[in-house]
Length: 170
Image (tube, rainbow, N blue to C red):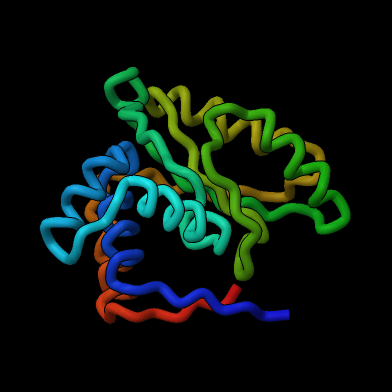
């Protein structure tokens, strides 16, 4: 069964404000919306956020860690070709490597793709070696990130929410 949840200008404004800063207090959101759109109580903001969460439009909140401030200055992307019969085991073993911060099942040249964060090239080499030693990993290919040029989900969200009334399938 497909349900629909229709957002309005207030829902979209709440999502935008929380996307900019997930720690924005509901009292501040209520105050801003009351000034920009129409009077809105803190309780109403809370109820709307709960509905947006239940609809899957908002999925929790995130803390962004500045790993470079902790001495981790290198990001690498690793394509992994694994034996399809061993893919479940490979994924479980990859989860044990703390430097792997994202893991995707992909199509194309590699069936798994991960992002690692390391202190330096030597640390990255050690992580990539651990990946290569996992039973079922046939081959890896690494790419070192030199610079992050775009990290802006706000642009996508603004594009999605540019209309005040948006319908989402649930």
